[in-house]
Image 1 (spheres, rainbow, N blue to C red):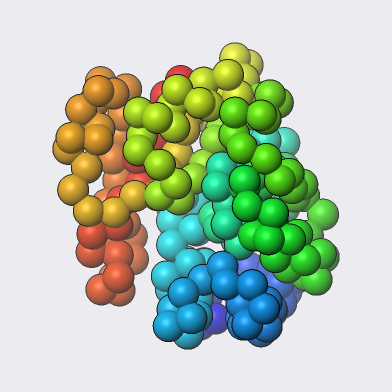
Image 2 (cartoon, helix red, strand yellow; image 1 turned 45 degrees about the horizontal axis):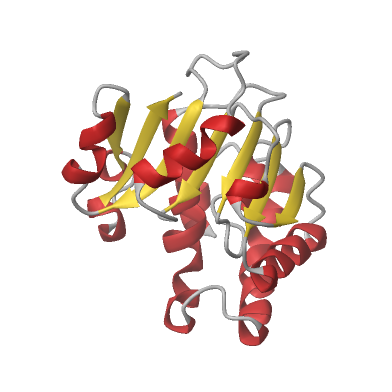
Length: 206
């Protein structure tokens, strides 16, 4: 938990309590339904929560913004971002029902009021959002094809509406088809831990 406060020192008491509750909740749920590698649960705050919050280092979402988290798994990056941005609305989607169950129960347990959930594929979701967010769910080109229909035309953020992805490793080939529209941010510029050396955020304006 200290690592979250290190990079986000201005959390409210409620946000601090919500972040602090995540470890026991995910440990408990992970024993029943495997949403995080069993070996990785000890690294929950660095590898999952802080990683998700990397999106907040490149943009602070305007209150009232609506975001869809595609392939949320157990709730990443959607749940940490929903804690950090309580005045924004988050819609978490995953095609695996068990994972949506875990994310839903975690959110309910910490009293998150600004998240909704749907067990479906992204192709089935027709609603529109300011941003679609995801964490390594599929190649960029494939994801862009599926989510263009979900991006609102009206703008309310300084950053134009689009897709924001957490990615890792070499991305040159993956980004090549959308290079003119994409911005790549290195998370090592924001977080000093070894884990973030190869982690990146890719933003594509739509």
